[in-house]
Length: 247
Image (cartoon, rainbow, N blue to C red; front, side, top):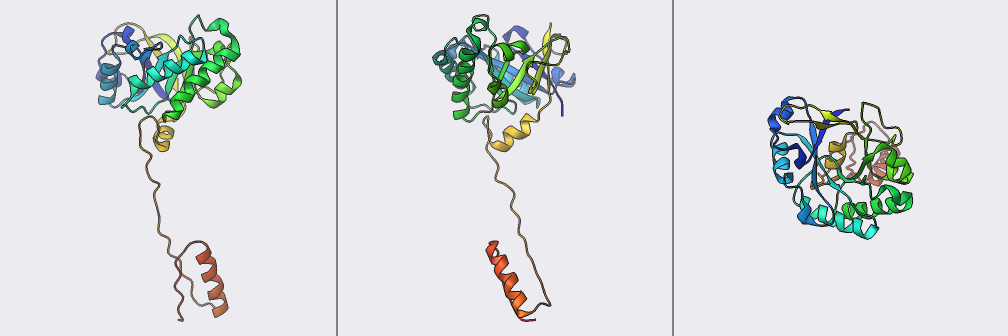
């Protein structure tokens, strides 16, 4: 599969979501905010979320990180949860780790930051992912991060991610043009069926649906008493209710 996605924040200004959908966009990742405090919530988050849901787009969200320690990452994750509480997302909820203060930290510290942030999200029932530029995944994050969480990798000019081959979402342009949005728009391609996985698992605000059940009725005739007894016992062992009668 492939979904045509955009990602937006307050920097995109006013958005006409119906025009966006009619231009072929199928989903959006909305910035919820940044930093350690819930008051740093993106001022357009509520408006963008409502607008995107109203026109039937797939929706995900992200939180921009400035954390340089695991403790700060946990604070950021809790602020993120506070801002998205009560909403449903059929695309992942992402940690955006790319800030210039984080680049010098190295793999061990950045990986610890990611795991601390993700631990809070997953404990709260969210399907979590990591966003960064492609090379950051190899220079600043352990391979386990790419294998453990959903990967959203930025590599523009339509070049596929190389350092994060496990990517499910690829940000391929920062200069896209979409009806309903003035100026440049970040463009993304999603190749994994996150909506089915998320809804099926009952994550990101969705309730897991009970599996369909079936009734199986089996019948056999024209057999000897011994064979009938053998079949009856076998069926009972499978949890079936068995009625045996002489023909």
